[in-house]
Image (cartoon, rainbow over the protein chains, first blue to last red):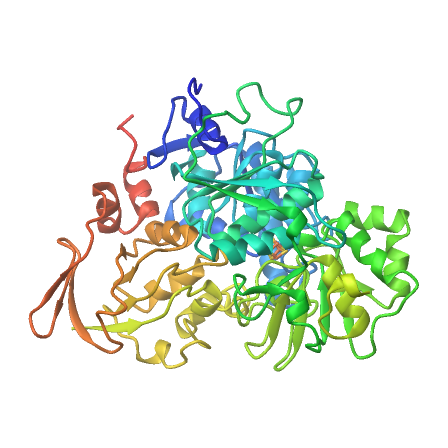
Length: 409
Length: 166
Ligand code: SF4
C-alpha cells in the first residue's frame, strides 16, 4: 500500500485503512483480533447489551477470551463473574477461549499464534503492546472501546508518530531486556511516548521472549504500540523497515554500557542502578507476569539459584506466564532448581501483579517484582513498597534477602 | 459554581481507583465511594456534580481500567483539564462522554477555587470575572460529548462519528 517510506505503525495502519496514512490522521480500521480477559469481560458484555443494545458480536472468530487475571477465582464474586464470562463465550460460539491456568492473555495470544505480523489487535489490557514482538500493532483499550469493536469489527485511531530506538551492541553478563526497558523508562519518563509508537532497530538477534518484554514495557512510556521489525520469512511482503521512514526522533542505546537497573517506589520511571539501592530488605520476591514470566526468565533466575537456597524470611513466588512455560520448565529441570532453592510455584496467570490474589502485599511490606508497575497500592496495601527489576536481580535478591546486584552473586 | 480539584502529574489509575475496589471485586453500586479513596480520602464524600479536576501531565496513566473514569463520571466530574492524558484514559473518557481538555492550568488555579465551566465555547470563568480559554476539541469530539459518549453515539446513529453515512 505505502509506496513511500513509512514507519512500521504507518505501514500497518495504512494497510488496514486501504490508503497511505500519516501521523495525526484519524482513521477507522478493521480490527483483526480482540482479546479480553476474565476481569473485564463482564463489563464488556454489559456494555454490548446495555449501552449499545447489540445482542451478538460481529465475528466470534476474531475474539480471544483468556481467564488469567484472577484465576482460579479468589471469591464468590469473582467466581460468579467468571460464570457469566463462560456462559457468554458459549452463547457467542467463541472458539478461542482459554481456561484457568492456560496463561497470561498476552503470552497466550503470541504462543498460540493468534496475532501475526502486520495485524491490528486490541486487548482490554494495557500491555497488548506486547504483540509488537511479532510486529503486530497491538494496543490496549477500555471495556466500552472493546464493546464497540466487538459490535462493529472496527475502531478508530489517531495515526501515531514513531520514536525509533536504535540499539547497538549486546547485553553484558546478567543484564537483560528488562534492564533495557527500565533504562528507557528512566530516559523518556512515563509519558515519554504518549500517543506515539516505538520502533526498535538493531535487535534481529534478540529471542522472542525478550522481544515480548521490551514491547510490553513500551506501555509504561505511554506508547500506543511498540514494534520490532519481523524477519523476512514471517512478514507479509508489504511489511518491513523502510530506510528513510520519518521518525519523530531516534534514540541510540549502546547495550554494552547497560547495568542492572531497578525502578524504586512508586513510579516506573524512578530508575536507578541496582548497585545504588542495594541492601533494602525485602519480604517477597515475585518472578512472573507478562513482562518476565517466560522460560528464559525462569532459566535466568535458576542459573543464579542453582544449588543455593533463598534467604530466611523471604518468600519467592514463581508464576510462569503460561501452561506451556510451566511444562517446559518442568521438563528441562528449571522448576526443580527453583523449588530446591525454596521458591514456590503458582498457577500460570497474572498472579499478584494487580494485587487481587496469590501474593497480595500487606502494610509495610517490600516486594521485588519482575512486573511492570510499582504504583502505590498496585499489589495490595498502599503502605507496601514495590521495586521492579529483572529476573536476574530478583534471583539475587531472593538469595540475600535484600536488594542485590546480580553481578555480585 | 464548580470546585477545582487540583492534582499533580502522572496520576495513575491505581490512584483514581485502586484495583481492589473494582466493581468486579466490590459492586457496581459502590463504585461512587471509591475514587481517590487512598490518594485523597475526602474526595468521594465532598465532590459535587459539576466539579472539575485540574492535573499535571499524563493524567490517567497505568491500567486500562475503565471504571476509573467511570467512577469520576458517576460522582459528577464535569471535565478534566491536564496538559496530557494517557491514551487509554482519553479513549475511555470519550466513550463515556466525559470531557477532557488538554491545557496546563496547575500553576494558574488553586485547589478549592470556584469557577464556571463553559463547554460549548470552552473556557473557565473565575470569581473575579477573568476568563481562561480552553482548547476547542475537534468537531466530532464535541458532538460525541453532546450525545453522551461514543457508545451512545453509535447506538443512536449506527455508525462512528468519523464515518460517512453508509
Ligand atoms: S501480568 Fe500483570 S501486567 Fe501482565 S496482563 Fe497480567 S495484570 Fe496485566
